[in-house]
Image (cartoon, rainbow over all chains, first blue to last red; front, side, top):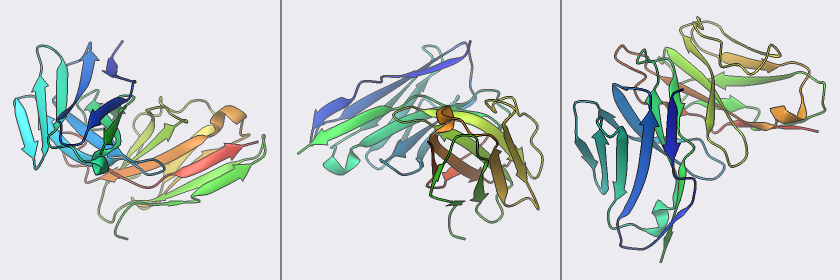
Length: 113
Length: 116
């Protein structure tokens, strides 16, 4: 079956360090992958979309990589800040038809001052 | 409106009652999605609308769940004969719905349902 896996354990890092979150998927070849941020009690907020023909994408302090051979995406936050503390979700369009964006379970990031 | 609006934000109901959750998407967004998020869990896909049509309803957990969308805008998710396991946050999202994939989803703040 198709699966999207994110580390369910919280990631604790020190302010200023780079946070790296992992999203792995199986039995699927998505055309693109998305990352979202979710704060407690709020809906997810879109951060970045990366397509299968893009190896890397950047937005300010964020960087996403997409390795279709490893079936993995890495999400990096450089120079992390306490305000970056949140749950980060990856999402794939499981049938490439734009009608079923499936989310991983998310990884909670805690950035300590 | 400026964003996706959901109501009610909180709903407490008794087991066996019916509930209706409403989603008002961003104007002009043709695609609308419903997800469910249980405490501490990820998002569970429920249903997707393109315009007023829902091509795939297989994500709905049971036949007690139904959803409709009218006028290509507002959507209602109805849960009949609620059970305690229905307690969760129900999230609605919309997108432009252009070809080539879902694109960026804009989420509402969710409707928190508690079934006693």
